Image (cartoon, rainbow, N blue to C red; front, side):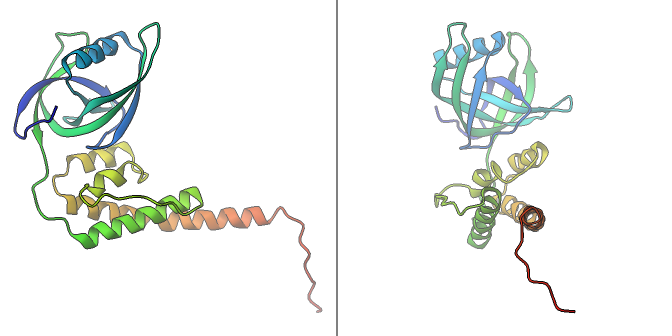
Length: 216
């Protein structure tokens, strides 16, 4: 089910208030009749569908196709719990409303091919691990595949809002995405560290203390 570059195709579209990146796992609960029909079509034809950001009454033109990886639950009333995985980014050229669900003519695109700067890559991994450690309160072991685009992997759990993540999706240069992540982490990590310090101070104020008075 691979998609060739510069290929134009009409795909089913699922407008959602979120952004999915290539290789990112996206669990979905399908409950609306029109999307039950869409998933039935995708299963039958073994076709991907597009996830496009719908936010503040705007449908963003750049999205990412997802493939159906697993049907986790099928309910008697037709509702579904599914696992999908991001595949290829696209730009919408035109939308169609001839089915119960939206469809779009899209063209696919990928990165510009510039080699990845290993220094930027390692800096992002280091900062991401630090960020996760601060949030979870413990050191975690993350396995970063040498061949993967780390920016997409990290953007999922970087604390981005949807518009920041949409910007990551639209960028066609891995180094530029890595630079954006570094700038983001270098801004928010000190804020989190300060918040943690305040939390520690507040927690310590509620305990009985065995303190020796100073002789004055």
